Every structure is written in structure tokens, then in C-alpha cells.
Length: 473
Image (tube, rainbow, N blue to C red):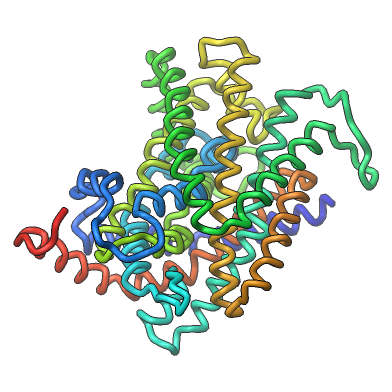
């Protein structure tokens, strides 16, 4: 097993090497420059559009529901476990690179949402289809269809074997086990490996709930997301703010550690290759993109279903997803971890790092703090499972023109992947997810760069019409 983990880790290092980091960051820089840093100038407008649905727009769900569907797939274990693993591996400086990637990623996410609506198609049965495969094929031309197919393949595998299933259910069962049976006193042997009854029961319950919801498709997922996502983000942000305010005097030292770690040229500790800065950059960017998915091409699949006639408007709404996910939620998680020093304890891994930070920072007993975090993580990860099922189904449809029967078969395969997730190692789970995330990003970011001129011209046209009163806010 250790040899397999080492092989997966090596592949992950190649995929998330300097070339991919440069490609993703360069895309954000290019779009930010061409759009005049729209993510700053138009953030207020974007937040207003987020809660104000467009009248008479065509699509399947409201813009807010489409955003909540995207956020349900975005706000997940990356915000709790991903931030922790990034800081544990890359030091406090990883949070700086995570934030920088998110700032630039807001421009990328804007472009994704805009292109998704501009190039979406409508099937004979009335279903709205869109996403990177369609703006690659319809925006770049039929000769680029192979790139759309490549994205769809990587997206399908990411949903089935990475970010959509294994990482999420693994995070849920790990948190449940750490709360209910931290001493692993109640275990059972499966194929010669000991697992706790908590892991088995939690995995089975989440699998059952997943099956009950995803059979209903996008509208049921959107309905659940509209209710659950805003509540869970507010509750989790409230906990993190409580930690920060209870230890507000420690913020200057935490910020100093972040800046120092982000730009340190010292050799990385523990035998890691490169400098502390490179280690922080790699982990911060990789985990940041895992969390907010800017550049991955997942969010535009949901954005394409929004009831809107204005691509720019939906682009702005889509952009707020990265702002909420990383600039707000991940920053709070990261500050809580750095202020507590939990990332410096070698015995702690994954969710245990964030759980230790909550125990340290919240003015409750450790038992209550652990329960709060477990509850937040469970809801975050569960909604991510739902959202990524929709994404991967759309990838399947593009690849195969899937019939309803094929789609239903795939849903059961997806449910089976959720069921098996708890029984894989944490390190392998996150490395597999990283690999597919990186592979998804390559064709999508390439297409966005090639279509950046379209994004720029559409943006100028919309705001010119808005200024002249030809479109309504």
C-alpha cells in the first residue's frame, strides 16, 4: 500500500508542478488586467446580483439557486480539511498564496460563468446544457472538440474518484470517528483491516442520504442547496469569527507568520524539495483551487442552468462563489489554525488540525467544539457530494450522449464510490483528488485564455448598455 501511495504522490507532484501553477495564475493575471480588475470594481454589483434574480430570464433554476448549487459543490472539506493540510504541509505562508490565487481566481470564475451562459445549448426536452465542453466546442470551434472531450473525461473521473466522492465521505467519517470513538475502541475487521463502527455507520448513512437526493436530479439538488448552503456558511463563519475575536490580540503575530512564510527563501524542512516559499506556494495554490474550484471548470456547469439572458450578469454571480469560499471562509479557517498553532503538531493530520484549533479557540468545552466542527464538516461535505454528482453527470452526457438509463446506472456507480470512500487512506485520497483537479484545469484554463477576448468584449458591451439604460439591474 505504501508503494501505491508513493506512486500517487509522485504523479501529484508532476501534475501540480510549476508549469500548472504558472498557467492558472497567469490566466487570472491576464483576465484581471483585461477586465480592469473587475473583481474589485464590480464586487458590490456582483453581491447585489447574487440575491436579486433576473426577471424573464431563460434557464432551469434561479441565478441564486445556480450559485448555491455551485457553492454546495465548492464549500466542502477543502474549507476545513484542505486549508489544514495546506498549512500543515506548506506552513502559514500557504494561506497567503491561497488568498492570492483566490483573488486572481475571481476573474477566472467570472469568465467561466460568462462563457457558460453565452455558449450553452438547449436540448429538445428543454434541458439547458453548458460548461467548459460547450464553450470549448462552440467558442473555439469544432476542431477543438477533442479538448472539450478531454475536460469531460477528467471531470467525470474527478467527480467519481476524487473531489466529488472519496475526499468528502472520507472527511465526514474521519470527523465522526474522531468525535464518537477517538480511541477506536469499537472496531471490526474488513479484509484484514480494522475500521471503527462509527466509520461504517456514518459512511452507510451518508450513502443512503446521497442516494435519496441525487436520484431527483438538478432541481432537487438546487432545492436542497438553496436552504442548506447559506445556513451552513453563516454558522461556520460565526464559529470562526468567535475564535478570532476571542484571540484578537494574536492576529498581528499570525499575519506576520503568514507573510514571512509566503516569501521565505530558506530550504524547506522535512526533506521537501525547494524553498519554504515554493512549498507554501504549491500547497496554497493547489488547496485553494481544490476549495474554490476557480479554473477547474466545474462551477460553469451549474451556472449554465441559471435563468438569465445576460452572460455578464451570471459571470458576476458566479464570481461571488470564490469570494465567499476562499476570501471569507478559508481565511477564517486559516487564521484560526495559525493562531492556535495546531498545524505545528506533527501528530495531528487532516481534520484533527482544524478540530484542535476549534478546541483551542472556542469558549466551549472541547466536546462541544468538536461536535460543532463535525456538524459543519458533515453538511459541507455532503452538499459537495450532491453538487459534484450533477457535474459529473453533465460530463458523462457530453462524452456519451447518455440516455436516461445510462445516467441512472452512473448514479448508482457514484453512490457506490461514496460508500467505499471511508476505507481509503487520507493521504492517497487527497493526492488522487489533486491529480484530477489539475488535469481538469489544463483544458479549461487553456480555453479561457484563448476566449479572453470574447470575455472582455462581452463585459464592455454589457456595462455600456447598463450605463445607457438599455438593460436593468
